[in-house]
Length: 114
Image 1 (tube, rainbow, N blue to C red):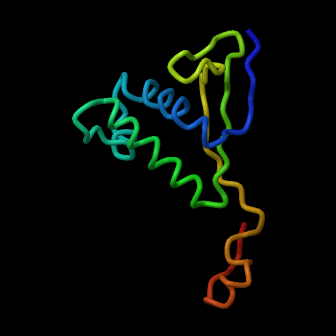
Image 2: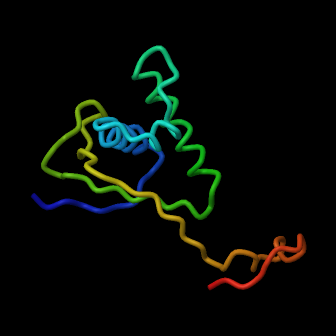
């Protein structure tokens, strides 16, 4: 089984967050439930809400870079028959050190970045 690493697109978020949920709910991870609480009447509704929230966070943060790992030999019928997402990670990639943009300098930000 050769796995594939690739960038995540917005269309990938439902499968990605479903994989994340499966990974963190058994055994329960308190940090996951902090970010993705089970507040809706059904697990499916809570998952949809968590997916939308994480997609919004990703799209509103220019440093957010999600990567996914998929298994090309396994299709995910719950998500349109795409390759099954078996893992993922969010990385924050900064093109400049914090405080180096002109807007941050004007606002008094900046400082040393090590």
